[in-house]
Structures are given as structure tokens and as C-alpha cells.
Length: 184
Image 1: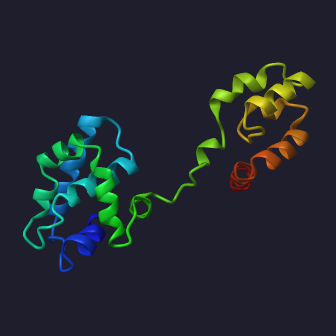
Image 2: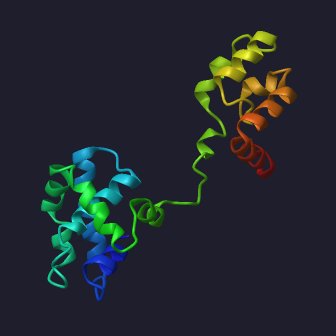
């Protein structure tokens, strides 16, 4: 992602240094970011890289990666939230967006809704008044419906009706759940 920003907005002839230096520098920078703000998220990393890069926008080839992501970069990132407008305008000049840069670093190997295949916290609700009409209504109102890993769903007499409801209300989650069952 940084390379994309550097070549399109700072210096078209930029080349990442060979060896492990860029990896070490980024690793250290992200460790500092995590220490300061807690858990790292992909959007936070994108914002940090954009902010750090934006500070060097007018330098051409007169900079090094360790300057961009040094300790001062964290101070810049933390100092002024009004900078986002100017950074977005800068990105737009090269037809880049935060969302597009985010796509470059997000792991697409797992579906974003895969965490809903089984929601442990719903088990108590599903077990409440199990196999009663009112229990079915409570379950449909308060949960994401049928799940292949739910013990409550396995014991429920309304499983077929619940599967239909889940498919109607949450088609993508239902698809993920049925795919999960077929892979097992």
C-alpha cells in the first residue's frame, strides 16, 4: 500500500530498498502504533500510512522510508484530525481512496461474515423456551436463526421452519452456514 502511494503521489521513480530494512521499519512503526492506540485495525493502518506519507508529499526523491515511518510519524498521526480532508484531497489527485488502499491490505481469505456461522452468545436465547411457539418467536426476533453448530438448534423441533426463516432474513449468512455444513 505504501509503495502505491509513494509511486503515485510522492516520487514516480521510488523503489523500495532491498533486503529486510522496509519490513523492519514498518514492523517497528506498527509496534509503536499498537503500543499507543491498542489493537491495530486495517483502517487504522491505512490512516497511519496515508498520514505518514502525506507529510513527505513535496519532497520528491529527497527522503528515506525510515524518515516516513520514524517516531515522529506517530506524533503527526496523533496531532491533528483535521488533516484527513487534505489527505483525501491529495489521494484523489492520483485517483486513490482510503477504501481502495484498504482493499490492498485486507485478508480476503475469510468471508467478513464468517464469524456469524456460530454465535455462542445466542445459545442462551435459543435455549429459552426451546420447542415452544413463543420460544421460536423469541429466537427469530433475537438471534440470527439456525446455525449448524448450535446445540439448541440441533434439539429444536422448529429446525426446518427456522432454516427457511434464516434463509429469507439472512441469505448470505445462511449460505455460509450451509457451505460450512457441506465442507464438514
